Image (cartoon, rainbow over all chains, first blue to last red; front, side):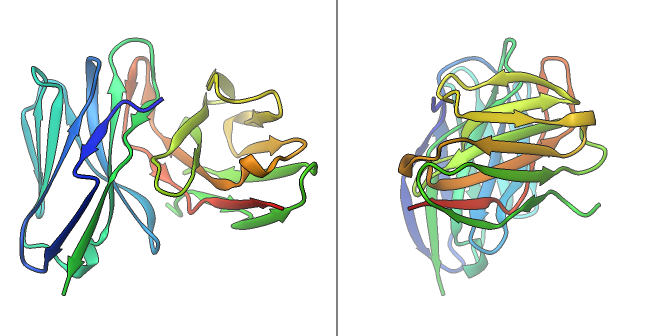
Length: 112
Length: 116
């Protein structure tokens, strides 16, 4: 079953622009994680944000988490062609689950 | 740290045949996960292990699927009597883990299964 829903499903921008992707989820979480997938490197973990955190940065990535709205956003600043990939959010649900529940992903195309 | 490896990378089989995939996790990781992914979808959870114990198996997984992780090291995923609907990318991931909490997962390159 899918927990997260990413929005938009697809995004096309020019190199140098910022890209924002959103993720909504349904149940209480321990943490939320963002992953990137492209044909060259497979699925790669980008950033993990815990339920008691509101914002986290990693290089050109900025993730926010709003637990009252059950939503998260991923911002990629100064995008590069190499950022072209699918981006997934995955939630670690509070409770006895120890697995991640994945969304359907946002497909990002960064045009040179 | 050599990362997560999977073997084979590609498998073509005829309907009705059995197939087995292998995953070697990062050595210090106690958790190992299997996922299935089809085009345009996110990873779909199949099962996971903590050390050698299989702690959860997806309700979507039929009895034709079985997984093992002997000695808490590598893992195998077997599909018996394959069907065309089993065609997908099978992903393995490993992570550290503690009770009631999940950490970031490290994925292998996947095994692409095609059932003809």
